[in-house]
Length: 293
Length: 258
Image 1: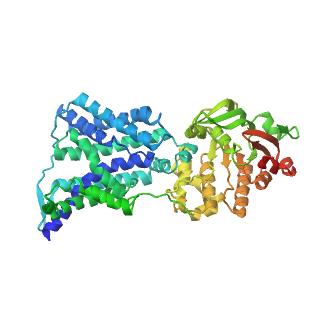
Image 2: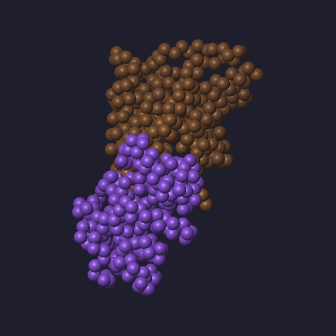
Image 3: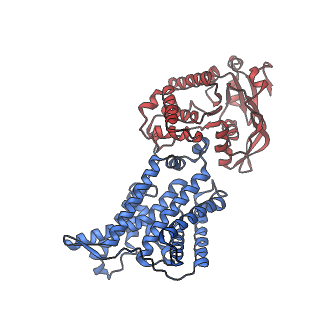
């Protein structure tokens, strides 16, 4: 029993690491209907920049602040050079543009900061803590708290502020938003900047766990099943989806793994995602068109 | 172009709020939607824009509000002037700041936002303080009391009439001088249509807000409008005072393209 609980809880907590990545996608998808393939490379870029600045001798907080400034500037540049000229094109065009963008961002990161692996020490000791007889990783607990806090802050931003309401208005109906004077370009800049910040948080957590290196951009592939299960348009969905994926892959590895020789974690979430696509294509919390007949 | 009596609403002739001169609009640089439309709206006027499906009413309104750009269409000829300044080719959100607001065909409320959030979104343009925002929204509830009872309901779940009221209320909160209404009667019960037009007239009288209303419902719109234009195949076919248009029995001919 305690093995089951330990596997479940470990999985749930680890799953919040996926949620962190998925939230960045949700933000941009909500506001512009684009699956932003570049989210992974932005995550890598921001983590790498922070580590490089920190290694150059700047205090951690200052490095983080500078990285955020760069992310804001980056959002403005991307909006001007990619989103604005392609506005009102098909989602596929925009997706291809973000695919291209991901290589540009990654290339820039490599060109400026090199391709070495950097260690990132957040000062969190990865010592296990016992709750009764269940073993829980301290790092995972902190990651889960971070994801929870982030979701809460974003929920407040979305529901209580003018920017948040404008953002949801744009997500619902771009033309109507334009007609009442909402500045679409500004909204896109803000969303990309916020998604960049979320990417930074995710990048720091993942970087602290496995080192800041180029494979970080591949966490995109972990976020995809999370989004399919939770829904592309819901931050809550990204959290729940992450929990489900984390728990499911951990349980599968422990209980099914031994029979088929292990190595289940990379593909099991996708099997789960396909099952969800059969029964609930919009995901658990995905928005379907809200219309009264 | 058949012109009826020579002096439709004197105000419009002297200093028009909006003056559209011989515009031509293309979609995707190949589909001609509006061939030659000229019209004017005076300050505080209600003008009806009539015509059959595909006559070019919606495109004309979009050309004026700047929303053509979002449809990848262009005004390729002619000019659009607001208080004498050319505004053709300016983005819709900037035109909203200059006082033109467009209520789109099919209402286009923000379905996942509550009724009150929709109204709030309408106020953002003028950046009001909290108190002022509340006052503006209360004013709209005054005109459309049904909206108050639905204030916390997602707009997508309200009835067609309520959505139309919400779309108009939201637009009014941008403090416009000119409201472009596209088919406000579409899909609504006659009694609701009458209610909406009466509120439009009341708003027009109390605030002096001008309205340009594209409609297929000839009778109701002409009863509330001062003047009217009839579009046919992307051109203005008739321009006259509303009562003259109403008196003229053969509008149906133009609708049917006879």
